[in-house]
Length: 191
Length: 227
Picture 1 (cartoon, rainbow over the protein chains, first blue to last red):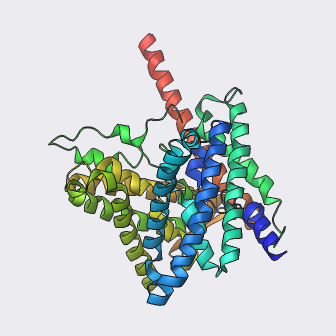
Picture 2: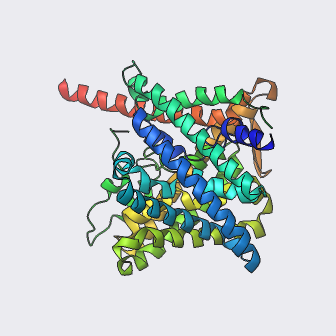
Picture 3: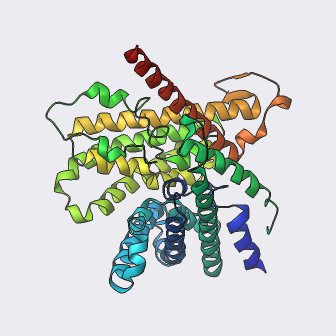
């Protein structure tokens, strides 16, 4: 039950994009097509869960023991970057079809602040290992949900009649505002 | 996004002579990283509900950007091409950690207000973007100017966003007690603007208006030519 409320809280209430403002660049950048949005979402789910687990283990087993907590930013970003690199090489060799679908989104994930943000939040909120996994999964599901909904709206926006100056990113930001208002209704749920 | 030029493409082939004035001033209005290229959106949206915090993070990012741009332009030519991104990220992470510790020590109030977002300067696409697109290929002085120009552009965007959001959301500006004024009473303020969704709306409207203005300007120019 405790894990369920943590999961719902991370997915809907403190949604990583609409409430915590992390990972906005990929949402604006790769949400033009539903298929690429889903590909990005899948990659983010995988990397967030694995990197959250890895950073939690390294922080609690290595950095705390050595008294090097202040090094966490440097260590975490390196873990995320090397993990992204590893995932890319692994997929290229063993699942070439999936690798083709994700293509350019894979290397982009090293600068996705949702992933490093989730890893830092896990530490800041003193989660246990299981909570960390649940939280990371919830966060990345929330990311995928928003990028999917947003991409379906954006496909429609392409053909709609928008003022000249607002075409593209500005109208997309206004749409995100309305989505954020909708997600604001979840406040109080699950926590 | 298709009509935008990515920042990597705007960097000219390095020449022996740099236009230092353009490097310093282009980033502020003409090539503003936030309003024009949609880079570094996460911090620009997350902590701009208050002018002072926006100013604080703007300054921290400015210092990090200048330091890393300078450092990377020095080491750029010695770094093997295959592992350049992890090396740049490490350099950036070192600068960010130093800034994080300095803020914690000397400005604890600002440190707790900004929270996670100081550490997240490390994944700020503007910092890595300038390192990769400009500093790694250009001279030290030019990279310093480029970092300063883009940092000032980011700071400018942060202040504009923070100013409008605080003013519309609370009816007053309070710059950490240093200066402040009240435009209209609290009852008439629109709290939406200091809540998360107000950030998207403010940025969307600002970008939309600037794009509309430049379209209008071009329109007038072509009309004049035609007449």
